[in-house]
Structures are given as structure tokens and as C-alpha cells.
Amino acid sequence: MTGTVTEATSPAAATATVSDDRHRVLRVDGLTVRFRLRDALVHAVTDLRLTLRRGELLAVVGESGCGKSVLAHTLLGLLPRNATVSGHAYLQVSPDADPVDLIHCGERRLAREVRGRQLGLIPQSPATALTPVRTGRRLLEETLRAHGHSREQAAAQAEQLAVDVGLNPHDLDRYPFELSGGMAQRLATALALASDPAVLIADEPTTGLDRSLVDHTLDLLRRRCDAGHAVLLITHDLSAARRVADTVAVMYASRIVERQPADQFFSAPAHPYSAALLDALPDRKFQPIPGHPPMLTALPAGCAYAPRCPLAIDRCGALPADRIVDAGTVACHRPRGASA
Amino acid sequence: MTTHSRRLAAHEITVSFDGTPVLTDVSLHIARGETVGLRGASGSGKSTLARVLALLHRPDRGHVSLDGQPIAGARHQVAPRIRTRVALLFQSPRAAADPRFRLIDVIAEPLRALGTDRDEARRRARELADLVGLTADLLDRRPHAVSDGQLQRACLARALAQQPDYLLCDEATAMLDASTQAQVAAVIMSYQRERDAGVLLISHDQALLDRWADRVVDIAAGRIMAPAER
Image (cartoon, rainbow over all chains, first blue to last red; front, side, top):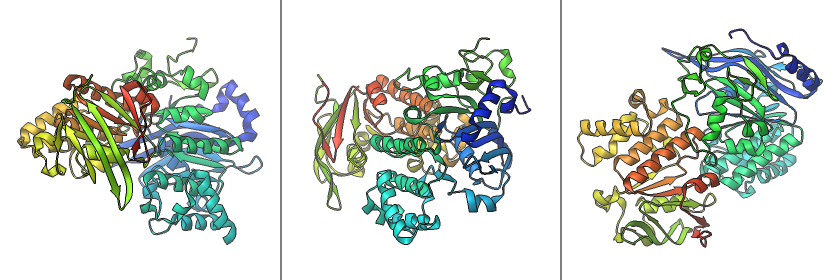
């Protein structure tokens, strides 16, 4: 499949589109990202489609290096110069607002209206994302004031945000390099929440946190969704996704290969890769997936998982189209639970 | 019952940094062949305890013993034949591996330090790389050009190069995806069986501890909590 299958081409998806239109805050369609290297082309994201609705927590999971973080950086317009992007990503913060195409609206608009305002980011490595020359308190107050709070409001709100993320307000007077990895992570989370963004992208937000703080942070994201915001959670931690996600999207070798409601995904995954990933969990079979993920510079022509897949047949040499299984979609010629 | 002669033990260890107590009177032992889980909140002293056991940090009070023999002095003062029996695997391979080294030399360096000649060290490094599931084409790369999972496997191969009798894993699989975690765990478990090695597993992943640890010790605010099991 080289042409794009849009959602409207399948009848079930078309119905869903109409009824959920008002709640949709983000629609990514045919998103493709390539990086040019001196002697190779990296296929980081390929023909990616997803939607995010108000109140939804969508977890994007997959092995390291499958393109998860590139997806986040693409939506925020934070890619390096050697990247080429095609496709669309429409952000619609309220039902009456005009959608903004994040890919084509231009850096000026992204910087002034979108990034850090309507679309927030909790970055993957806060230690490198925080400027070392400002204390946590100054960083937070500065951000809050830029979003229209008065000096007094900003001071009070900074303390409140610290409490919300599980940071002792006294620690706000430290510089980022004086914080532990987990404390820096919480400060980065507080900064991302300062603008109260309609959509929050959380890129591995629990790295370096111990269990109780992991749960605290995840529950915080869950509460945002319950209050009507939307969260795109990028994580390698399946138990994190199990705790809070409404929907799980599995990424493999630059593509989303399965998307399901979380309950369905954890009880009966449709894609053989999803099933193998879940079997690797210590409370399941604790069995690694045989073989290695393909290099993103040399992807096979057909299904990228076929070389590792126990169910692979000749047909898997051709790229599988998305098909509907249960309440989700799966890109596989031989999905579990399909009548074929 | 384990005999005292085949274990790595910390005896009444006390450590403080700038006057702040980090460990207070901590005793813990790991017998050969056994996996001990160590669980605690961040800042509870887990990593410091691992560093003390690996002889990387000298406690203010207390001592470490190996097979019943007290070890005196800092790591560099201890004979290589003794100190190489304990290896430590860190959470972040980025911080642990020298960015200037190719992976082959990340793995071979401890062997070189023990006096193995270069060709022999590299030959052994290739065997170890194969054991942890690193393909040969990765060995000429430097750390920035490989993934976290690949680099952590190189660090594991490096830790196993000296054939330790005790392996201390400080959240060594926390940043890995489920499949890579299971693979790294399988390599460690198989080494453990073959060598009858003792493993300290620092983790806050309950499912991982349930699956792997023979017993679990809780640490809070620098003190060992009363045993909850057996």
C-alpha cells in the first residue's frame, strides 16, 4: 500500500468520525518523516494516522528507536534541518475554532500560538531541557507570567504546581543542576502544565522516578483527561500505559501497527508484535522477542515485523493495509481475532 | 542454609554525605546462586549501598566481607583478583560507558586492565557481545550511535568480562523496553546458573522482583526494614 487510506474510506471509521468530530482535538493524517544522513535515509515515521479526543489519554508504546519521540517532536515543530515532513496534523483546541495544521502553518504561528501554549511537552530528558542558570521558581513564574498571570498570581500558582507534581515548594529555589533526575523530571512536568495546554505530549515522563512518583505523575495525567484535556503519552513502560491509558497505539519500525482501547489491547492484542511485546513482561512469559527490530535506514518492503513473526507467510512480503478488528485497527495480514 | 563462606556481605554500614546520613547500620548479604531484591523509594540509599558493596565507596563505619574475609581499604587498594569478583551494572549506560570508546573496547577494557593482551581481549569481547545478543556490526560503533538497549547490553558484557561471582544490578533494566528487559534478564539468569553467581537486583518493578528475586529486602531512609518474607 503506497497510497494513503484515509479514515473516511472505511464505513465504520466514517461513522465514528461524524459522531466524534466535536470532541476531536488532534488528527494526524499520513504523517511521514525522513532524516537525510550523509549516506542513508532514516524512515523515522511512515504514513501515520491517529486521532486524539478531548478527555482521552492515548499511549504510544513500542521498543526504543521505533520513532515514538520523533512523532512528538514533529507535532511540536522541533525537528532538525535534515528532516523532511509530509502529511497533516490538525490541532483543534475547541469545537468552534479553526483547526491548525501543525505541519504546514509555519514556525511563526507554532511559536506564538501553539508550542507550549495549546500543545505542551514534558520532554524526555529534563536535565538537558532546563536552563541551568534559573531556579525552578524563576522558570515557573516566568512561564506563568508569559501566559498572562500577574506577579502575585504567578507566585502562588508556581507553589501550587509544585505541589501538584509532588515537588516540595522549597526545592523550587534550587537550580536545575542541584536537582536529582526525578526532581528535574517533576519540575519539567510543572512547567509543561503551567499554560494548561489543551493537548499535552508526555515523552517518557516517568523516567528516573520511583514507583510511588511514577504513579503520582500518571494519575496527574489521568486527572487532566478526566477534566476534559487530552494527553499523548509516549512510553516504553507498558505497565504505565495499563494504569492510565484509554487507548493504546503500538509503533513498530516507524508505523503504528495496532490501535485498540486499552482493555482490549492488554487482554487480546490483535497484532502478533503486540502479543509478543506483552509476553515479554515479567508478570507474563518474560520472554524476549526473537531477533532485532530492523534498522530504520533499511526497512523491508513488506511488513517490517515479518522477519521476526512466527505467523509470517508469503503474503507478508506485501505491506498490510489497516483493517478494523474489534474497536480498533491493525496493520497485519494475519491478525488475531480476525475472521480470515 | 547458606554457609558464611560463600557470600558477599555488608556489615553495619554507615555512610553520610556532608553530614546527612544516607545509610545507617545497614547489614545485607548475597549468597552465591541467590538473587536478592532491594526495594526502596528514591533517596533511600539503594545505590549507595550497591556502591559500598562494589567497593566504589568507602563507608564511614562498618565493612564489606567476601566469603567471610573482611575487605579493607578502597577499591584501588584491593587486589584485582578480589575486587573483580564483584561487578556493578548501572541504570544509565550513557553515564557508564566512555563515549570515546568503540563498543568492542567498552567490553574489552576491563580485560585489558587485568593484563590480557589486546587481541585476546577483543576476541573475548566478541564472544561476550554474542552472548548478550549484540550483532558484530555494532561493535565498531561508539555509544552515541547505538540505542540505550544496545549500550546497556554492551555494559552487561563488560560487567561479565571479568567473570564476577557477584553481580549488582542498579535499576539496570528500568529504562529498557519490555522485550529488551526480558532479554537482558535472560542473559543474567543464564550466567548466574552457569557461574553459581549471586545477584543483587535493585528495582521498584514489583512484577520483576516477583519473577526473579528469591527474597526481597526493603530499605527506607537509609535503614533496612524488617523482613517481610519467609
